[in-house]
Length: 129
Image 1 (spheres, rainbow, N blue to C red):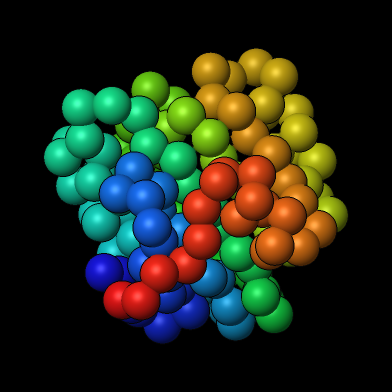
Image 2: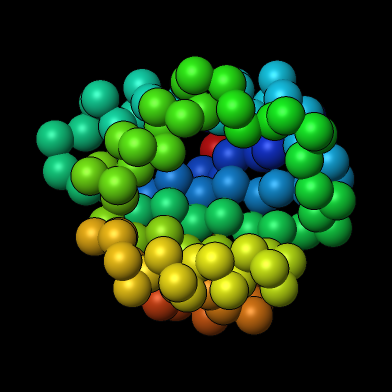
């Protein structure tokens, strides 16, 4: 389970669903930790996975966060390893980007206003860690 400053993994009832709560300002180190974790997850699964990202009091990311090699590699791996990318509470700018990316990438990207609706859409729920 990933638990780094600002990014907390949520245990789920599905082994192919990776859910995270993102809050506060995300540091470069936290972004890199998540990327390394997801790169290992992509390598461990022979089938595509689903991802749920819940933004809760999100304050953005540190300048330069996201330009680490592991982060870039995880973004490219996600294109061929993620089936559904579900987001709750993303900033408006991110929602627009997700809607655009859904049209051009082979990943089903969706945004929801509430966690309950997102969990139901994924036919999943949080589980005990």
